[in-house]
Image (cartoon, rainbow, N blue to C red; front, side, top):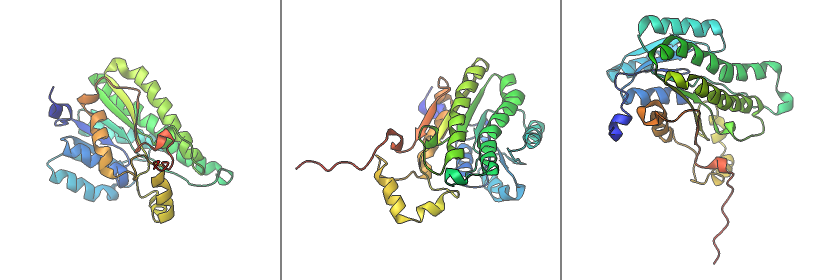
Amino acid sequence: MSHNAAIDLTGQTAFVSGTSRGLGERFAMTLAQAGADLIVSSRTLASLKDFTARVQDLGRQCLPLELDVRSKESIDAAVAQAKAAVNKVDILVNNAGCNVRKPALEITWEDWNTVVDTNLRGSFFLATAVAREFMVPAGYGRIINIGSVTCVAGYAGLAPYGASRGGIRQMTMSLAHDWGRFGITVNVLAPGWFKTSQNRVMYEDAGWVEYLTERIPLGRPGAMEDLEGPLLFLASEGSRYVTGQLLLVDGGISVGATRALPAKK
């Protein structure tokens, strides 16, 4: 198999949740540019209109769906709509997510449920619905659960978020073990610090950006294009013998780096 063939997604269909902005939009476009047709979703169909047109301009099929992953009924309805419209889903990117940044003593019951229900419970039930309806019968699938560096590291003010992302890692290993016999791989793509709509206010603080950058061995926060290769690897035949794994794309911050010591003169 040539290198190009290993990442060619022509003829495949990818379902990406949370596609109306940020990382989800970029993930979906990356897959479309590699040849995949798309199923995209958001809590509001209107937010997908422009993106759907851009994908169709590439010559790809693009089915927009209304989906709130906090609702089992919404998940089941969206997957039923997908099944009525397409005959297969080869790739699922479980991207829909949210966050609440507060000190632990200020986290409410509702805060916790919103984050964990969206990031963890929603990812599980969307994965099981897609696997049941498409991937298990086909004997093939690539499921990419989106995590973060908080899968392996804890940060103040991110207790529910970190709990949900740690759970994503454990859930992924379990599903990989469960579904390997069906030809389905399940992995975690875990970005480090990337500027998104959720955290952009933090990047407006030059002092915080400097503090962050000092702790990243590669010397900068992530750029969107840094995620394209890892995503395509996990979505493609190039990763056919990789499952249950956590792929950190974090510039090395998870190794516990701090400011380098000055060289001795």
